[in-house]
Amino acid sequence: MIKKIKIEKGFTTFSFHERGFTFIEVILYVAIITIVMSALIPFAWSVIEGGVQSSSQQEVFSQARFVSERIKYEIRNANGINSVSPTNISLAVSPPANDPTIIDLAAGNIRIKLGAASAVNLNSTDTKITTLTFTNYSSADNKTKHIQFSFTIDDNYPSGRAEYDVPSYTLEGSAELRSN
Image (cartoon, rainbow, N blue to C red):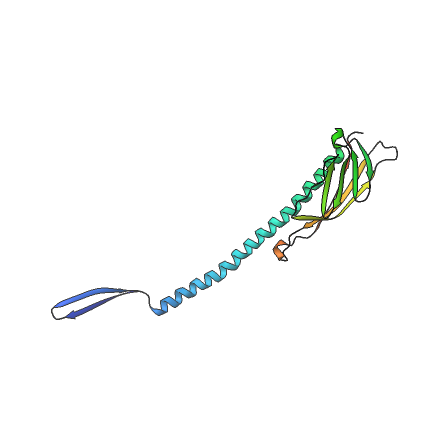
C-alpha cells in the first residue's frame, strides 16, 4: 500500500510516499503461502516415495528376468545333463574349459560355475533368492531333455521403510536342450 504524506512547515512543503505493507496484508500473504506450501509439500513427498518404490520394484523384476534368461541360455546351449537335484543342476557343455556348468543356490544368491572357475553370483546384492528348484522332465528314451526351474526373488534392502518393501516374486520357466 502506498500512502502519500504531505508535510507543510512554514513556506516549505515536503512530499514523500510511504511504502510497505499493513499488518493485515502481511498476515494474509503468510496465510496464502502457508496454505499453498501445505498442499505442495505432501504431494512432492508422495511423488518422491513413489519413484523410490518404483525403482525398488524395477530392480527386483529386472534381476528376476536376467537370472531366468541366463538359466535358460545355459540349459539350451548345453550338450547334456550331468545331474539334476532340486537345488542345483550340472550341465555338460563345450568347450571343455566350461565343463561342467553348475547352477546352484548359496547364501541367497543363484550362482553359476563354469568348469574350474570360481562361482559367480547371477543376482545383484540388492536382491536375494529364497528358493530355487530344478525338475528334470526329460523323456525316458532321452530324446527330449527338458528342465523346469522355479525361484523366488525378494529385495535385500536393509531398511524397514515401506517404499523399499517389494513383495517377493516367484518366477517359473523351462528350457529344452538344443543338442537333441
